[in-house]
Image 1 (cartoon, rainbow, N blue to C red):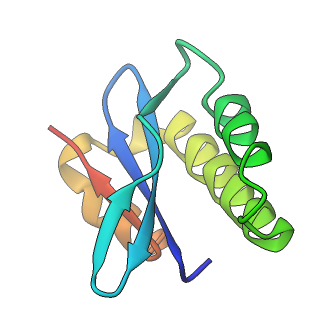
Image 2 (spheres, helix red, strand yellow):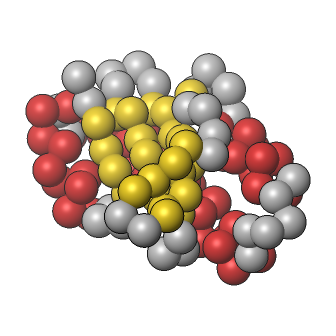
Image 3 (cartoon, rainbow, N blue to C red):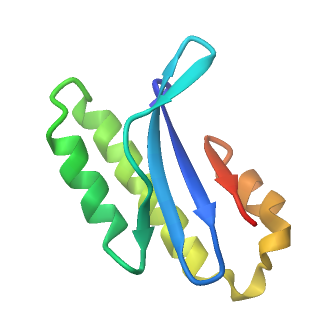
Length: 100
């Protein structure tokens, strides 16, 4: 998954995920932000990836597993105020996290 970066918006009532592609030291957005729990962000990401034959099956699995792990962690966030995003960043160092 070195070619991709998952970006998360860590909010109180929702979490959103988007996928970027790394090109050199820059990234370009591949998806919009998919919000959970308003919609099934995991399913939306899966549908997007299924349409991209150039994304390897192993990358698809890694991306979807990471989305699952972060969403599950967010659901347990009652112990983690938004101001402590450094803990989240340390737990998932290959993803980018933004809060408000």
